[in-house]
Amino acid sequence: MKNFLLGLIVLVVFVGLALLVTAIAMSGGDSKVENKDNSGTVEIANADKIVGATEAETEEATVSTESVEQDDLSATPIVEDSSQNDANEEPDENSEKVISGAESSNSSAGYQSGDYFSNNHTDSKAPVYLIKPSTVSVYKGTEFDISSYVGYADDVDRDVEVSYDKEIDTSETGSDSVTVTLTDDAGHSTTATFNVNIIDGSPNASSSEGGASAPGKVDFDTFAENYGGEDVSLGIDVSRWQGEIDFNKVKAAGCEYVIIRLGGYDDGECYTDRTYAQNIRNAKAAGLKVGVYWHAEESNAAEVKQSADYLKSILGNETLDFPIAYDWEDFAHFQSYGMNLYDINDCFNMFADEMKKSGFDTCLYSSKNFLENVWTNERGYKVWLANYATQTAYSGSYFMWQQTSSGKIDGINSAVDFNIYYGKLN
Image (cartoon, rainbow, N blue to C red; front, side, top):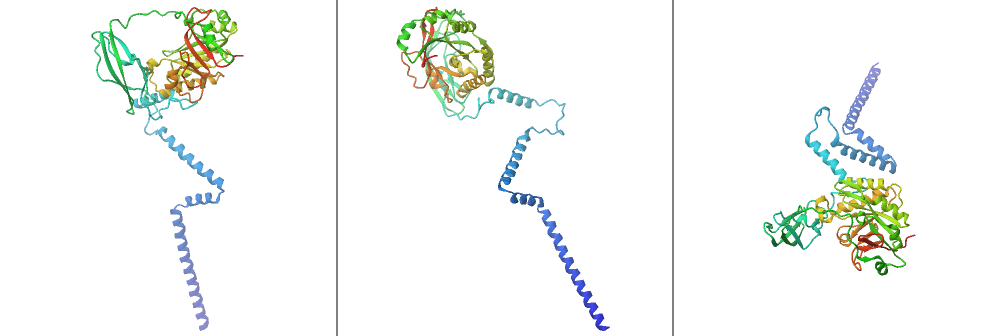
C-alpha cells in the first residue's frame, strides 16, 4: 500500500511538471506570432511572393507598381475635395486665368504631331537684326521708334528689349545718328548704329495700290540663253500683280512651268489670290506644269492649322507638279508677331506636316539671307532659293532658283519672276 501511494505521488508530480512545461511553451509561441503580426506580416508575405516568382513576373510586378505611383502623382492636382468645393460655387478668378492661359498656350505652344512652339529651348545666342538699313528716314514731328524701320529676333526670347544711347529730336529737319541695343532675357545683346534723317512730310500720305508691277527688263530669251540647258527647266511664278496673263503666249515663248500664288494668311484671315482660279486653269490648258505657293504670316499652331485647312479646301483634288511652297516674308516686322526663331521654323514644319496628311509635299521658299540666318530646315525639305544675282553665293542645297524679279516675257505686260528648276519636267 505504501509503495502504491508513493508511485501515485510520483505520477501526479510528473504529469504536473509536463503540464507546466507545455503551458510555458504555448505562452512563448503566442508572443512570437503577435510580434510577427505587429512587424508587418503582409509586407513579408508580398515579398515572399515576389522572391518566389520568376524573373519576368518579378519585373512585371515592379513596373506595375511604378506605374500606379506615377498615375497617382499626376492625378493629385486635379482631384476635387467635395467637402471643400460646392458644385454651384463660382470658379476662382485665378483658376479661370490659369485654365485660359493653358488653353491659349496649347493652341500656340504645342502640337500633337511634334514638339512645336516649345518653351524648353536654351537661350544660347544674342538677338539678331533681320532687316537693318544703315539709314532711316523719319517724318518731322513724329516719334522715333526703331522697330518701325528694322526687323529683329532672338532664338528664344519672344519680346526682345530695345534701348537707345540717346533720344532723337524730330522737331526739326536734319540728320543724326543713334546706337540701338537689342537685349534678350538671358542678357545677350547686339548693337547697331543707324543714321537718321528727319524729313518733311506726313506718314499719313495716301498711296494707291496698283494692280500690276512695272515692266520687266530681263528678256526671257536672254535668261534662257544664260541659264537654260539640258538638265534644267525654266519657268515663272505669278500672282495678281501680273494682271491678265496669256499663258499660250507664255508657253510659246519657251516657259515650261508656272508657280501660282494660291493665297495666304494676313491679319488673322486666310485669303485666295483673286487671279488664282483663272491662272491655274489657263496655265494647265496651255500645257504648262503648275505649282502653288502660300504667302504665310502665321505665328502659332492655331494659325498654321487654319492656313493649312484653308489651303487644302481651295486645292481640293487639284494635281500639282511641284511641292507647295511656304513663303514667309514679313521679316521687316518680325518682332510684332511675338515669335522667336524656333517658332517660325515650327510654323513651317507644322505646315508641312499638315499638308502631308492630305498627300501634298511642301518646300521652303526664302532668300539667301534668311535661309542662312533664320531657317534651320533640319528636316531637309526642298528649298526654293530667291537670290537676285548673276551667280548665287548660297552654299546650301536648293532645287529651284528664283534668279530675277524683273523678267519680261510675251503674254505678261508687267515684270515677272524667272526661275531655274534643276531637273527636267516630264
